[in-house]
Image 1 (cartoon, rainbow, N blue to C red):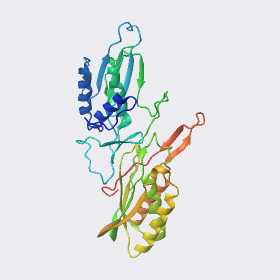
Image 2: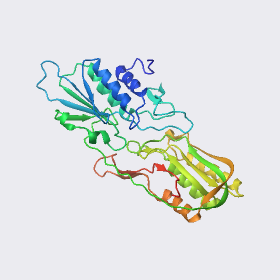
Image 3: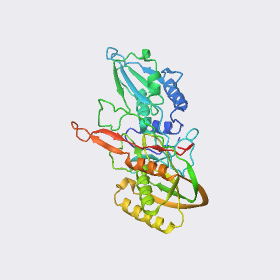
Length: 352
């Protein structure tokens, strides 16, 4: 395999990470990585077991003379959040990631990278080639991103270690002694379609996005938040109507793109001017990471049924009213986010 990362410290770790990136491994599709782990361990004389969920467990014996040391369990997860830009052709079920290495950073072309938590898997496997002292148990769990399903279903009777280090962390210079809790909430706003309007597609894209936990205090802006502001402006100032709205990302991802179909009847010029003013104003607010932000308006050249006015007001009002991002910082630990919220997915389906 031709690796993009060469000649760096811990090169072997990054080479293993690239191997993992070449294997599709979204949540629920981790068996390819499980096979890679099993084969990797077998070549080193270590047997690895795979349970019915796809969790992989193995034990690396202690170095001779160190059998008295406590066994340590290392744990990471094999699934990744599968996100891509709308203009990128990529099938996460069958395609490996296309990586690049620039300015000391590894990235993926047009898709999420999956370093959460592929880099942990790479570190753990690299240790199988290292002269470690205590016995190591390694647990690679599945479907962490969708609710710790692999960890919940794993038979913990297999574990003999009394110490565990979870490697699903953000910084290699920090040890985390806790974990944030999360809660998902779904809201439904019913509507009816009435009358027809000239349909235009409103597109916000080019934002950096990120993880709704780790990156929530990074200053990155959500496309959903910006779309809410823009729709409110256009509804109040220009009298547009709403046909549909979509943000088909992940609930734990800060949205990079958001789309809405709006109705414009006879006031196209004022709408375009309002959009241009909005784009110019927002660009002054954004951090450098969101410098790719754009707003476009595309004429669908067709008629479409519009959502009734009262529901439109509720939808836009809800999007504007839900406070997102950092809501409370810790009073005890400087720089620690205590409570945050992310409006991640919006779908227009079945009259709601």
